[in-house]
Length: 370
Length: 243
Image (cartoon, rainbow over all chains, first blue to last red; front, side):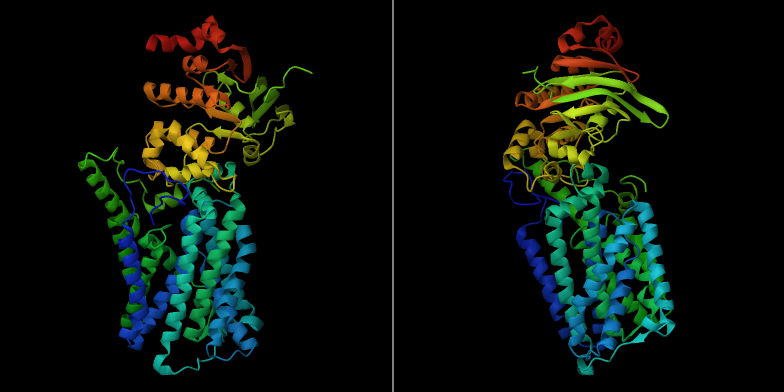
């Protein structure tokens, strides 16, 4: 969460710890995990559990996305590309290898993730030759190129006819639950990976790239390789999310597999929760992912959720410009500082909360030009 | 045996920004253990010279040798491995990373930071210890300068390139920083210092060079330059009047 010690190798005493007490952190984490695990057991209504499945898919995808875009500051608006690759991988593999539609479907998850990750290497190698603003535009473009490919490579993808996936063999009485729990498990893996990256030297390099890419490079960060590896890792998780989504929906179509609103959804969720924090994007996915699906179900395909989306985003930018998690963290720091100032025994109180800046300032005003 | 070879030997380097000749054949040397100052007005070529030494710019002519090895045209991140650490003008700390993380970045070329280096940096700059968990963007200018120097020290420099460490800082902080640079030099680190603050720089430097529009026009021991009438007139006149 907050960016304190990268490792515990230094025994330096800082005057006031900014972190929430350990018990609070672990306690709330346990509480959230427990809530997510029992959720489908309590709310058994299939409409509600299907909302849960979508939330898990977004949770997985945005946690993966954040490993690259959140930490490196390179906002990718084309990760639907990997979501689509994951969906088509799942569909093609099941039809080509006549995979029975039981639990075997989920064995395809790592395969689809690997395919998306491998595809990310040449794509990232091309895209990452440019810096931030240009990168954003190019990611969108490449996403649409893949959508066009899916439309036109008919012998592989079925073109606009799409592809059908076999109906799962497990009982319709608990159709959603397996998707939900697999999504939760995969999302947990993505979050643990993200946590590990954040604490590693590799992650330190990513953060340095976000703050000042040229300086990072001159200090010995292999910037191209670092960005590319993070890009591929994020693609693996987004691809795996696609491989949950496809069998859940039962069909794959180019315009829904490579869907620009999915790109936006990831960014909105991450910004809402707190870009580049570990749990911020996850929180954003849970809140917005569920809301979006709920509105879709309540008001049908009228895209009412897009209006709600817009309102929500405006509200977040007005009230919590840095996202939920950093805003709370800043409040907490202010309180710690206030407490430190009013207890004279502790040394020098730290200054005011760090200037994290507004999210778009952070994205757009750093590093060189393209 | 010949005379001891300088640590850094710059010969007749010429650097261009497009059609503009920023350096017109600059030569100087820095001996091991020395503090050498490059002085001059704005646009004289001080920063350009230092950026060329640190590998950020490539000379179109001339040679740079570090311990007898040609390094001109070698990119910056490879020079870090030789122990040439650059503290750029305007500090360039990583604003949204903590002081701790910034210091770790200085040791990025190593597998992991040396705890002894960290201890030493925090001893030299107690302020950094107080601010250890804070985002460096919240530090004052002086603290950021300390952090930039501390970060460079984490890379175990043999040659430390300091570009305008006094820029924009209060006189008291400047004096503090120059004291620390002296202490760093005493511990065996060679320093190449670029400064506009000529009196501070020359009282610290063993030797100095004065640059004017891309040429070295004067060189000598720090003490001598400080006493030199031309230097006093050109670079110290205002300062004496002001302080």
